[in-house]
Length: 263
Image 1 (cartoon, one colour):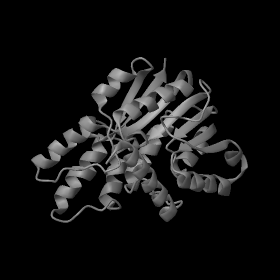
Image 2 (cartoon, helix red, strand yellow):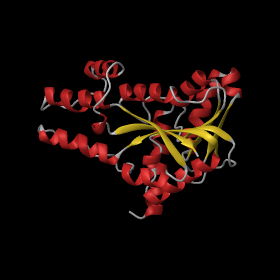
Image 3 (cartoon, one colour):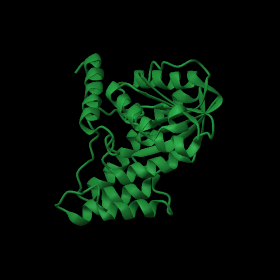
């Protein structure tokens, strides 16, 4: 599949998902417990009462949580026009200051329709992994740096290739199948990412969900073989609660939340 064709296919995939699932909270991630963990960790780093851009905002489910928590002006950007329609509908149904302090724009993460150095914070939540090449992922990172004010905050929650590989080594050593990323995802290579961003950002913290991944992606499936795991299982709910009080094992946390400051 050529790059242009692949980019179009990714956009069409998310347009179709938005048309079918509209405002469902799990429209962009079936694992609702992992989604709740994502939101909680991102919330802890969002600038308060500032201007924040949620790139790859989807149907606005997380964006609304971030808006209510931070009381910031929220700008949602997504390549899927159908997702933007859903996000506008979600915020419009809330109304009031939340709606008045929001804006939603159809746009690409690597060609952001925003002015330079005008925002205080940027969020990506499984957005960069939906960009088809490392070259375009780098363009997105440069554009994020462009729109951020000096010392602005970039909260990046993305799939990391090396950590997924570590998780898969553990799974296969115990007789479990490898986890394969969806066709439309390109996980971030952490080594080249860290080398590339030095010019634009400094890393403030790296936060993972290792306890949740061990419990939900290793112990749970191992305990029910040959049956298939269910994302909505009580075990995953318990794993989520456990991971809020225990930390560690982040070398096998496929998703990582990396908090960066603009230089």
